[in-house]
Amino acid sequence: MKDRYKSIRARLVVVITLLFAALSFVMVYIQSSVIERNTEMLHRSQRMSAAQMVKLYLELSFSGDWEIVDGKLQKGGRDFNGGSQLAYVLSDYLFPDTLIRFNAGTPPVMPPRRDLGDLLSERSRPRLPYRDDSNVKPPDQPFITAAGAGIAVRDNAGLPIGWIEVASDRDQRRQNSNRLLSSLLIGGTILSMAGILFFCFVVLRLTRPIDVMAEEHEAAKAQNEELAAISKTDPLTGLYNRRGLEAALREAWGCSDSPPSQLALIDIDHFKAVNDSRGHEEGDKVLAAIANLIARSIRTGDLCCRWGGEEFVIVFMGLEGEHASASAERLRRAVEAEHLGGEEAPLRVTVTIGLAQWRSGGFPEAVVQADGAMYRGKREGRNRVVLA
Image (cartoon, rainbow, N blue to C red; front, side, top):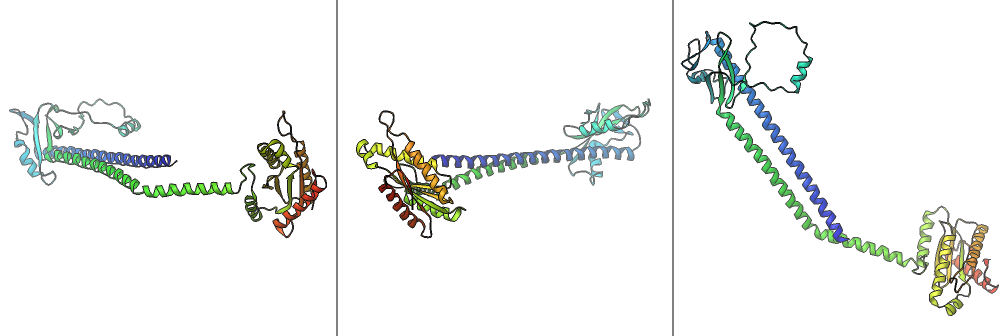
């Protein structure tokens, strides 16, 4: 029992700890992933906005068309020298380490990402009648590149001939910082899990004496309850003994709505002859059989006990005199009709019952009166119920 109790307790602590640690790890991982994703989306939006702002500034500040001269992208014949001067001019709106590059050739335009909200908005948007207008060109959208963000530029014919790219060393440092933060969060969670497990182990070790004391207390309590039950029970018949009957009477007197009303003292006739002729083992079987018959004959609220030797006591609760007398008579007849001893050596016994009313003298007075009535019945020939 002790080993089973310890095993269940230890397993419960370990399982709860592991579940808590796993839940904490998952929550930290989700939080770090969400933070990293949101940060990346914010920086991507900033880079794309910066690329669009650079193009808009050039379109408004410099006249002429975009063209390629000597493999370089120019606007109105102006070369921007790799964009360093332009980055300085727009330094109030860009990060300090922003790099602007002008690339000639076909832009590496990637298709824009479309989420569920875009699809739903497109489906709910009213459809316009088809109009063929070849002069209307869709505006160029910024796109993400390996180094940052870019936006396409077109010549006077509307053909894409290059793109402007905005990049920053800060993006890479920020990604490294995000990865480091995620690693620190996950590492901290793992250390916390290890700390929790160690704490649980220490608690289990420190509380072990308390568990031993609790188990010993429970065992002693169970043993005391068992001893108390044994001390109130007759081991041969399973009925109350004198001490058990007195304790049951005290409990019933305070809790029952029907107080004791009649007391019957039962004695087996010529029981000594049974022991002398059949032996004490057979006599014990007779006592057990009579006790079983008495227990089956009384009502649920009534009390019965083995008073001593071959004598038994029944306390009727809330039963009037004539009803108690009738119950005692039915018990006498049942004992007389009971077949004992088996088929090879049949045996029949009878009982004499003295019945007394419960008066102001209580239990002792009722026992004395019932005992006197029972002995009067013995003198009158036995096998009868005698009223006190």
